[in-house]
Length: 482
Image (cartoon, rainbow, N blue to C red; front, side):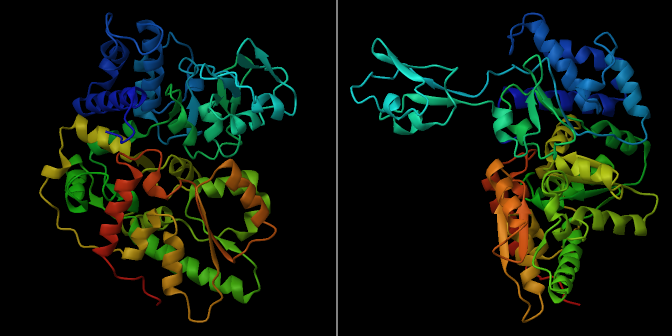
């Protein structure tokens, strides 16, 4: 189960487990319409206003697990079985990755400052004295904010000695670094697909579980059940996500039906070599800046919001793409499935079809639960570490920089800069770096701390980072300069 366990997470995981179990049993179409009712029986305690609203939300959660967005539904009367048939018949998944379930969205009030009951009505009244718009007045012994006059500068909160003033945010809007999620005419949130970078921050932030992503779980399990050769590509951030270590995870994946398990860190070694060579060539040509290209949310952010940086982004494909290309060369008939913590990887795979499908760690965890596989009890597979420790380090912020630095030619002008996590503030910094950067090699990670802090991990970022360090130490080989 996910480290940030809460009832919204449990609902999402519960749906994934039940859909996966129905796939294993071969009864998805026959049973899918019952899922909302099984998860919320008539007298169950409701998580929303009532059992019937819970079931409506669950219906859309099932649709997401089947690989559909809320806006793609024909109408509420269409049986889920019809969507299950469509999911089992589709050739390729489609975008966009994220959408808002309007039945789940609470239509949160606009972000504002509010004075709580802890206000003492002090004589100093610094809130009133410092408000630039005179939006604060005293009513009896309590301060009050006039919402019509307030400009949300936050000055009152900063000067209150009792910390009696709080800011009430809209969590999903606050989390989005590119202002891609906003209210529609009804007050509910919608995601602009042309602005969205699929980073998943809104999905993590929403306390109502209203942001859903299209799953590819049904697609992958359909191919596994059919005996299609499918190769699993676990991301470097996989270390620590599942108990028992990588060798047991590989055995568990093979038990699910995967023909082969290839560590994406092998692709990271290829990326490090190619990106180092590209950087050296750009420096020789007098380029002032090159940025990394491994984080798909960052690349989307540049494409959609910082076009001035486009010429600076490395042309080197991501480790996922390079390894998927290698697998396709070796086994042309095989399908490739990236397994990682990232929602943006789905969008990258849709744009670059070397990788056929993407599963998150959370979805893989649900599949293991549904199939009664305990990873830590699997006999360890005979796995040989093919990747370098530096390549595994790609999963942590600064890892790409460290890998490039380790194999860069002697004397190369290498002045790295790191942006650790995309936020509204760091987006402004990116725009500033487009014209003047303090270094000449810029690494950008959408998630603070790196992929180990991705939106669909199953352990905490701290646990993931610790396990990753151990995996790096166990495989210290550096990428070759040749």
